[in-house]
Image 1 (cartoon, one colour):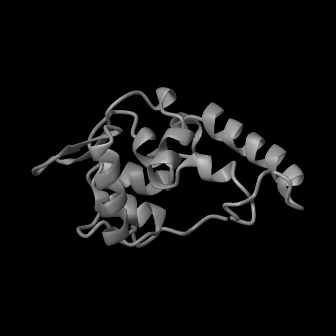
Image 2 (tube, rainbow, N blue to C red):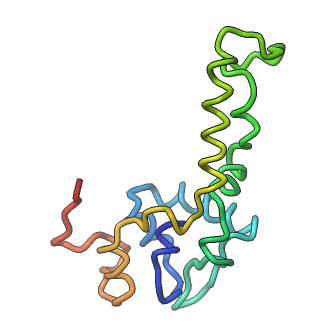
Image 3 (cartoon, rainbow, N blue to C red):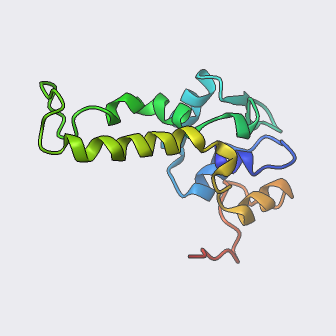
Length: 145
C-alpha cells in the first residue's frame, strides 16, 4: 500500500510493478491485493490502464487496520506463550503486555502515508511508461542498501 500511496498522480499501479518493486512473488501479492480490495482499502481498475489505487487517503488508513485483516491485533495481547489457559500470571505476561501495548499503539498511530513508498525508481519508470513488459526492473537498476 505504501508503494501505491507513493504514486502522487493517482494513476493505477499494476500488481506486477508492485511485485517487482517489493521483490515478492506476484501470486502471493495477488492474494494480498484481493483481500485489500474486498476490505475496501484498494480499488481495482481493469483494462489497459488498470491497476490498483487507494480507495481513501493514505493518511486515514492505519497500519493496525491492515494488520487486522491478516492477523487480528488481539492476538498480540494474549499469552506470549500461546497458552489459552493463561490468566495473566505466566512468567512472561508482565514483560510481554507493555511491549504488545506499545506495538499496537505504533500500528494505530502509523498510517500508510508514513510507510516508505517502496522502490521509487521502479515506480517512476512505471509512471513514465518506460517499464519493460513483465514489470521487470530496468537494466541499470541497482538495489540500494
